[in-house]
Length: 202
Ligand code: GRF
Image 1 (tube, protein in one colour):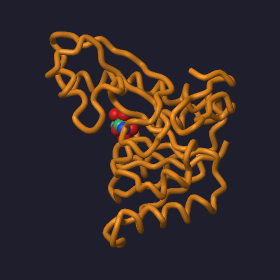
Image 2 (cartoon, protein in one colour):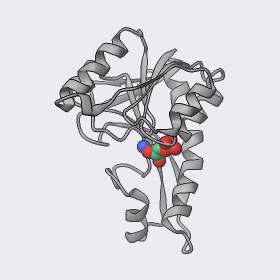
Image 3 (cartoon, protein in one colour):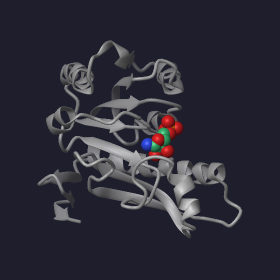
């Protein structure tokens, strides 16, 4: 399945998808970044994948920026849009245009800790368990239906950094797994708030 990947930073999740692309039937047509210096762009170039930096400063609104992305992505005829550390909130136009085709990975056990600084917040809340979630993107920020999660135990010695590393390790297993389900047409978003796996609502 053809896909576009949106990134803003390091791109370790992107790397896990590049490394697993064949096995999970994923053809990464383009990696788009809103950040010129995102290391993920280098990772894509190294793998001979096309990259594009779209400069947010050249657009007068989020809507305009996202409309530009819609135009670019529409031309590529992709079945999937993967958010992999993409740090911009998407406009309703974008989300509705591609509804059911956008996946995001979030570093917490949603619905716990949507938004930023999830590891710090999990430590402050003295959570015993933490982890990552992959969900369909809907208009509610980090609020779309969760498809699958990976759980890690929080140790008393964990710092924000160590916890982030543990969670990232699981993310690199979780995202390819869910994307493989998607490329095999095993999962679908129905009514914007329900997930079907192998035809059954989960
Ligand atoms: C990950 O923790 C992901 O869950 C979140 O942003 C981070 C991106 O990391 N959405 P990377 O750029 O893939 O290394």
